[in-house]
Length: 227
Image 1 (cartoon, helix red, strand yellow):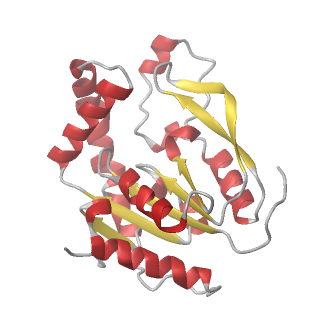
Image 2 (image 1 turned 90 degrees about the vertical axis):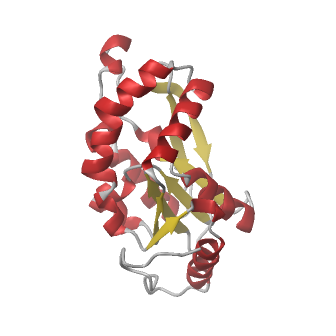
């Protein structure tokens, strides 16, 4: 890992159920501060290496459970990025359900956004993040978005998507994702289309950019950004 900048690096976590609109919120932050200053890391990149399993065995793994993630590697990388050091991020192959052999080189930007369904389930990750955002979207809308995404981007059939949703996605959402909402600094209805929420996020980031070492003021899940 290569040392780069010495200025403060901001780490933002964006959590929420599958299809909730996390990526739209991430994109709004990128648009606000520019791609040269913001990098988005997807939590899925840190699924554990399953090279020791054949593809049929990998298909049986519950990828919506916290145990599916290589938290040690993710924490190591987040700490490095906070210190201004570059990292090599794993690349996940959704078709083969495993990491690719190549990695993505990331030179520490000013702002790092970690996006995924379960980042707030891990205390070690929560403690590293400067800002924690939870995107709250109704279940039916999330399911429709997931169906569209998995069929178009991941080549899965409707039956495969619905079986996985019923078997793994929904139970894990109720057990882990939904309860993690209480760890958020800000809960965002309507995701990136919520102008008030985007304005609040901007204010939180600006406070940190002014080298304020205090934690963001919105510290409980009671805080919600309205219409």
